[in-house]
Length: 172
Image 1 (cartoon, rainbow, N blue to C red):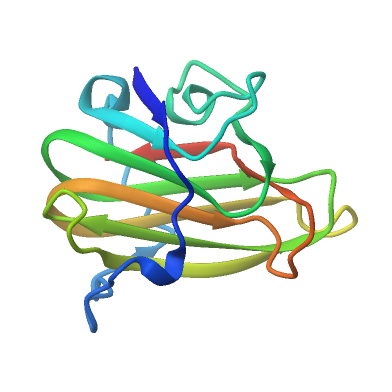
Image 2 (cartoon, rainbow, N blue to C red; image 1 turned 90 degrees about the vertical axis):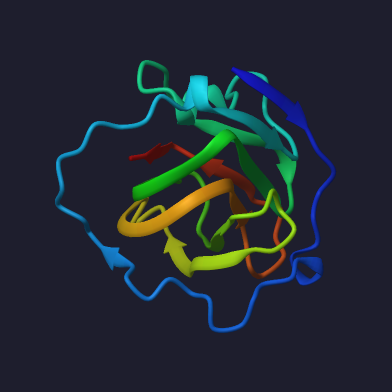
């Protein structure tokens, strides 16, 4: 898998085309599809990674326990497709067992190599050691000719020192 570390992106600087949220987004897709082989299809750009929890651990089905950032703060995981790709399904899984926090993620895509982005979903989720420690989102989408898929994670919206994690990202 090709990957490289990138500079953190200020979310406010990214231009999102108005009214471009995907209208046909369906949560909890029940389609049994074969996942794409991300290793062969993309170059991965990330703002950081803990060496014990590399991004491959979240993207490849044979590895675990998932990706973890090297430190606190907003993190970006960007998948740059070698060739434009049609996407029908996106599955995200976040696991947090250590800290109580509310995280936010923004999932967006680009048809033009990152010149513009269209937001797919923006969501907040509260993890708690005595509450929920696992968040799985499964979206059915109709995205044509995707050149970039980007996930921005704010690990703690209150500004704490939580570290972003991603247990799994699958695409079909």
